[in-house]
Length: 175
Image (cartoon, rainbow, N blue to C red; front, side, top):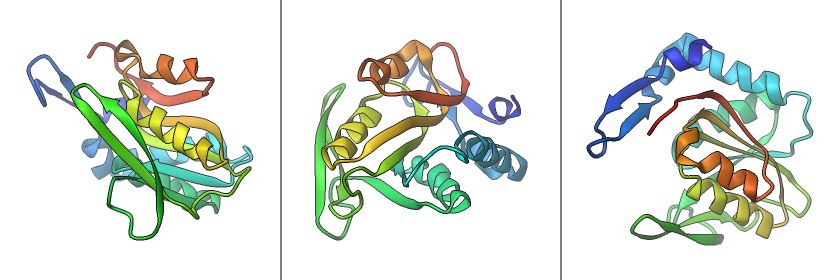
């Protein structure tokens, strides 16, 4: 798939041994960006979806144009303290410590069918927290959608263990 060929690999970032998959090269390429959004649109255009939720920050870059193309609302899933109105949040574990994501309390209505979008699935911790938060608000996750899956790190398996469906446009083996 041409999308994978447009992703840059940065060795040893952010620490030695990590092969960072950088989507900025995909995003700056007008053909690559269009291919990405069009491929997602093809997958979801006939699926019953009420809203698209994007995880900060690169999930916004993919989720918002997809929501626009589908005529759906977009929900930003943000780090703690970034949203201006009343929020509901969920804390989750990181390798060293915890973090929190939040959504506005009026973003999801009970029964809303929500597509969760982010650029990449690695450990799956943030995506898992977003799923829990959306379901806590009464939303139903249609699928968790990513441009890139790093299957060896285990995020896909983590989400599937929770009963979530997972889709990625491409995979990179290894870390």
